[in-house]
Image (cartoon, rainbow, N blue to C red; front, side, top):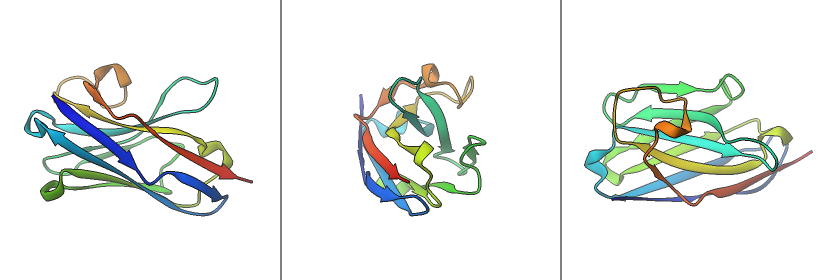
Length: 125
C-alpha cells in the first residue's frame, strides 16, 4: 500500500501563490507517476498536472500551463505543486494521486491507484 498526505492548501487572493506538497510513504517503489487532480463543488474531478518519478517528465492541463509547476524530491518521496497567478476558478479540493503503472494515460483519474485525502484551495476575487 501507498499512503499520500497533502498539505499547503489555504485561502489566497487572486493573483497570489500557494505551494502544495504530497508526501508519499509505504510501497512507494511501486508507483511510477504522481498526479494532482482537483474537484470543485458540483463539478467532476479534473486533471491538473503529473510527473514521472523517473526522468521527471511533466504533464499539465491547458488551464494551468504557465501558472502551475509540478516537481518532485525523490529523496523525500514528496511531490510539489507550485501554483502562481491563482484565479478564483482554481478554487477546489486538490488531491494527490499515485499511478502504479506506466501504461495508459496520466490524464484520467481512473488510471491512478492511490489517493490522498485532499487539501482545500480557495482563491478569492
